[in-house]
Each structure stands twice: as C-alpha cells, then as structure tokens.
Length: 267
Image (cartoon, rainbow, N blue to C red; front, side, top):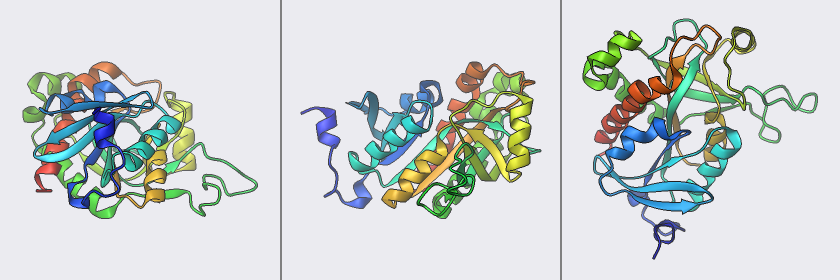
C-alpha cells in the first residue's frame, strides 16, 4: 500500500491521533525540520510531497505548499481532506512592514488578509466576496502557544543559530511580534510598494504570499490555523540580506526550534 493510500481519507480517525500539519512554501524553509523527522514517509499527491511521521513524539505531516495563494490553498485542502490534519501551522519567511519589525524578528499572526483582493465596487476593498469579511483570524489558543514557543527559541539566538549566523545577520536581540500579516501574489521588494501597503494597511506587521489563503481554507473546514513568519528583509529595495542564505542559516533553524518547543508543550 502506498503512503498516499495509508494516509488518505482520515474521517474515522480519533481526533487526538490526527496529525498536525506543518507547511512552508519552499524546501529551504522546511529543511531543518525534515531532518529531525526520523520516520518520515513521503506521500505524493497533486504534485506535492507530504512527509508523514513524528516530530518530538507528535504525529505530523509536513509539506511544501509552493509559492502563492492558489498553491497554498490547494495544499491546505489536501491536508484537511486527505490527511485529516487537526491543526495547520504555516512557517516561513516574510518581509517586515511595520516600524520596529526588524530582520531576524518573528511575527505570529493574529489575523490574515489578502492585500491584493479587490472586488470593488461589488464588495469593499479586501473583503473576500460572499464571506462578509476581509480578515481571517488565527486560532487564538494556537497562536498564543506558538508565540510563547517562539519567545523561548529567540531568547537564546546563539544556541538556536550559532554565533557565526548571529554575527553575520546581527541577530542579537530578536523579538516576537503578534498582529496582522497580509498576503498577496506579488513579491514585495521595493520601497514604493511597501510604503503603499503601510499607508493602506497601517496595522500590517509583515507581508508574504500564502498565509491568508491557508487561513481562509482552514476557516472553511473549521480547523485551527496559525502562522509564524521570520522576517528576512524589510520588503523594500534597500534590503541587504542574501535571501536564500538567510533562509538556510536562520529561518529554517528558527522554524525547527519553535516547532520543537511548541510540540513539547502539546504532550
């Protein structure tokens, strides 16, 4: 029997035995976590590899969603319908928007919004048609415990990342922020674009390309969702960080440390 068959159609599964889904857009964001799953068994569905196994004693399914809202929504639907995930956690990188949200900080979403959703004049700007809302809330309990786990991981950056990475990226006092994360099918990388977002959505802490879509799917299924993003740049044309190197040296290790700390509290 294939791994896909073994993990398909989990409707009769005891909810306590259902896996926790951990999602990233790119392989580098998930690499450190996958190395920590000793019994991972890949299942290939819809062009995606779903790694089913255990992390810190908890049943998990880890997957690369691909980049963008459609890819992320497809992945979320598969996790919920085919793997019966009892919660979905999205981890990866984002661009910082709000003042004080610096490279190396972590943002845990309280709400998520699609900044490029605009069906006006039929619906107000940003409102998702027929939903009566623009913002989708992260699960408060899940986001709260995830933020606490992030604070633990960031309290000792030298232990989490190593002295060399801390020095290279000047990550001596990384902070955890909680608030609005916005998503859109555009990589925001100019001062003009990031300033336009700040003017339009002054509450937004960070911008990325997937989270709000996953939040909407989880809302549809009634499944708890949370998102954690490491700030890789300031979403402007003055960013000096090597994006790929930052993911390899910092973000993937943050993701593993936070997930391990969070799962440790779920036992």
